[in-house]
Image (cartoon, rainbow, N blue to C red):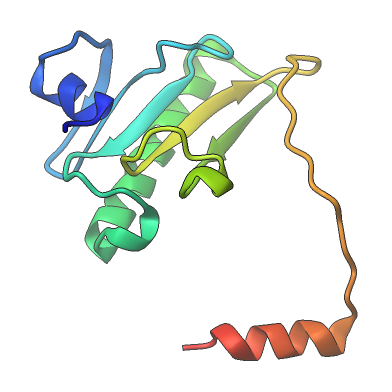
Amino acid sequence: MPTVFERLLSGEWPCAKVYEDDWVFAFMDAGQVNDGHVIVATKAPRETLMDCTEEEAAALMRAARRIAIAVQAAFQPAGITVLQANKPAGWQTVPHLHLHVLPRHEGDGVELTWPRKEPGIERLRELAQRIRP
């Protein structure tokens, strides 16, 4: 079954497109948190960042940068959050690789918090060793 993003890309469902190239397309989020909230998604139906190619990941970030610059110029937000989530436990709500370019303003109600842990340098080094290529 196609995802909402596949339906938007195909034209089956309408969207306010912002950008498109060979790898990605971007459109205004229908659930605007703040004016200028854009979703950038891969054209290929990849579920998560871990499922895409390096070229697709690079194209996603290149487009996000271009869009962030345009959003900054157009809306003059106090900041911009670029958010990319993977799998439901990671806050992903649509199973199609995408990121949000979200203009931010003081007191806009957007929060991102987590319990900070400070395991110490030795534990950090152990953790780093586990993920080094």
